[in-house]
Length: 167
Image 1: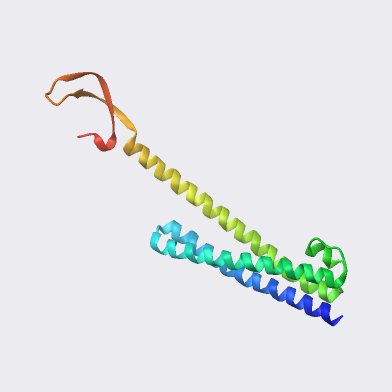
Image 2: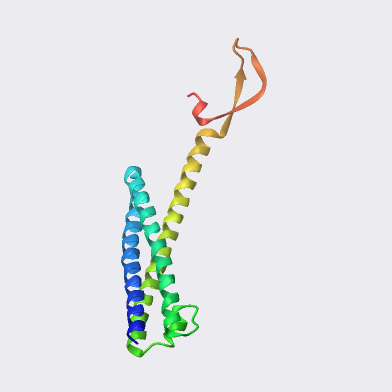
């Protein structure tokens, strides 16, 4: 029984480490959202670089957790595809310990996902605004009578974007 306890301990400590990193990522994403709102591009670049590093660490932790889960399931000699199924085989104290961590992790994952959705929506809104501004500057907006280089009137009307219109 001691070996199973140590496997469970290693598994739960991996969950704790993931929780710690997801909390960091959550804080970083909140910072990223505020930087987008104020338009601080330089600081945003730094945060995005840090975010990539966090994600890399979390991917490694996820693989580590999956490996420890497989070892834990094997040590109990049961067939479980996920933590929810494994909980049925654990003692009450172990179950409670694991449920608390998994619940924390799932809540953090949901929060991170919601923040990311908000950031995506914010970026889409900003891109839409930039597109509107570009349309005003680039798309033809007004017909004018055109003259060639020697002052002869050309046939038909010409449309010009706002940027090319003169008073």
